[in-house]
Length: 270
Length: 355
Image (cartoon, rainbow over all chains, first blue to last red; front, top):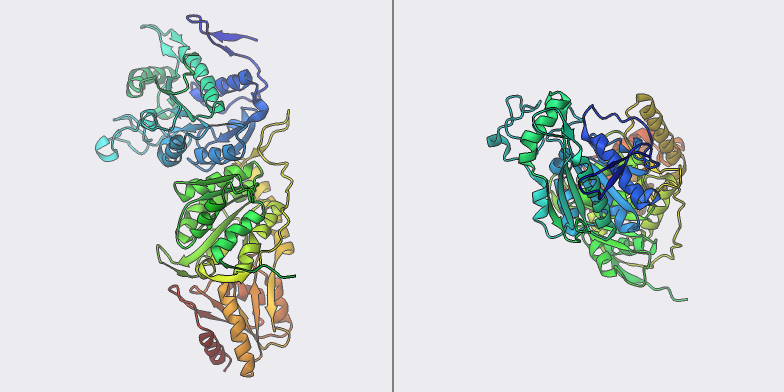
């Protein structure tokens, strides 16, 4: 099996190739979309923990609503935005299970913000992975709470005007302000330009892989864990894949700076 | 042997009935006039008397509560929530998903007057919302309508039983009067049923996964799923219609009423009989499936006059009209605003209509 290793630190490997926790089915995700990357990182972490048969995933409404087609575990589809509540219900009855959802920014930060905040506030032992690509992907490119100022979307054809919509919502900072969460982290997932040429680094994926594993470990220790993955949506941003990576690096990385916001259990140090 | 009677409020009886039925998880959100249900359960939470009652959690709104119920029930637990009209509206989203995903649980609506905030008095105005699939997408649930505190205690067990048997959400439509009134009851001896839940999402077993899904993007998949649900609703309609009749065998006029109104109508029937009017009562116990066969057989026996008495502007009256297939007249006596009609009211109106 091929592995992708962080050579700088040598501390973590992502297994490539076929994993039993993946169905092997090609994903429907668009070219350049980070959902596909995250799918593998999640499968990798579940295998590392040996918990495939103890996992229940929520297919949350958005681009990850068919995640069960790719991640080979038990799955429940939740109403739009309600994944944290559904997970709370599961976990209350079956604390032995590993429960997680991949939510989009529309799902988690718009329609489902209350469910997210209160699951986090209670410290519910569940894991939310937020794929923040700053736009509604599945519904075809409408403005999300995370859409940067001035971005043209189908519902902000003249660019997002913060006078009308209020400021951009920062979910990680919001959750970090609560007492409940044990682990809140933001990872910049897109491949990163190295210098002025078209050389790119996958450091984000390795950071993401570690963060997924740590998030699960926190859940298993009884804490609420949340990882926001800053991502791209070239199709709805109306950019080429390369342009979308550059845009994410130039705009989103500043708007949503990566960082470890909460780590009560010290999993990052271990 | 002396039977132990207890003087209990309807909502409390319902809560205790759910515990005696072996409920595992309750997700709460307060709303008058249903709040004694979570309050009673909160008191009993962690009591050694109810070892199966493992989860009590107050949600931050009705959406959270119903989705927590979905999560808990998806693992095969007996889960429940209760609310009243405004909250019942919010729960419709979750009930629609659960109907699609065939997740069994119990939702109680203690029906107050509406629409909007209305007031806290009894109405039966959520009848349509409860019986016609109040959420999106065209589904049905089983709806039980108790008419006494005794039945408030007994119906949670019946509700769980029907829910797991047919893998469907089951609703209890209770008028606010029954939720609030106190009566002497004898708690029924309830055998706690254990249900087989091979579909429950509790972790894959090798290649075998449990997928609880409501998205069927392929039209043919959706068509098959919808046909499957339709067959299930037909089976429920065949198996689960429940009703009670009182003095219908020689009746010329039959009152049709559910919930607390059926109690008033029973007294009205007695008074009408004393005045020489051959009246009877037909009481739906399941509002969905609607006990149409029972009503139709009354019409087939030659009864030509049906009078529906309900606490709304006329909702069940349509189901009664459909059931009697035009073989008799179907009139409506209604009361609004949170009031109950008096027996004298009903008697007078029936006499006028029978005049």
